[in-house]
Image 1 (cartoon, rainbow, N blue to C red):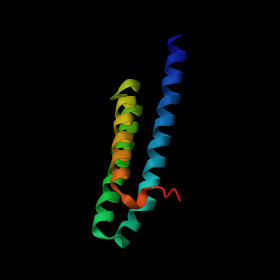
Image 2 (cartoon, rainbow, N blue to C red):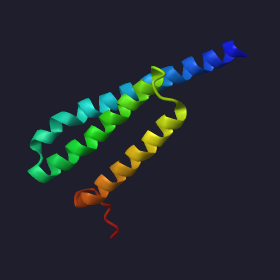
Image 3 (cartoon, one colour):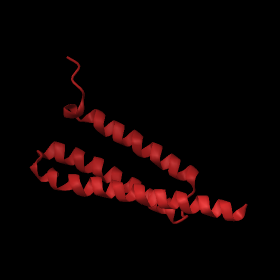
Image 4 (spheres, helix red, strand yellow):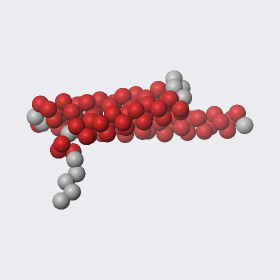
Length: 98
């Protein structure tokens, strides 16, 4: 039983590290584009990318056993709320319905 739980934990940790790397790749890809934006959009985009960086850190904290799955879930929901708020502030990110 304990061996099985450790195997599940290692699998979760590997998935968390993989998710963190994916978020890092998104940030690394998007970061150079900020230079071409106007000041307001650059600031909003930088805030958005900073949230992704924080979320990647949280995944690594989980993988290292520093936080549990419940705390990772809480932080993930918080990050999604902040990303949604930031997207709502950016009028260029809104969908045109007509």
